[in-house]
Image 1: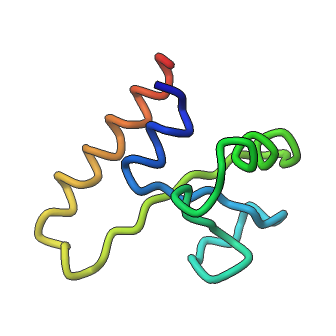
Image 2 (image 1 turned 30 degrees about the vertical axis):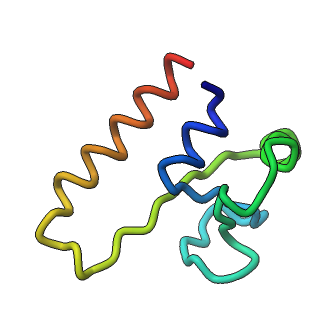
Length: 82
């Protein structure tokens, strides 16, 4: 499975902003991988000086935040082996 498909299936976003210090999910900063093609994903990676991936965790899920963060960390570890 490619990195794109792995991240897409798990609901990740990629930063499209030129400023790595912006962290909001408003338009122009992050885009959901489910909304782009693998080719667009590759283009973003090739044309940016950094790669920033993120996943939304609603505050309503605070009680399970530790579990969710471990799941996200596991995805990052899996990416290292792809």
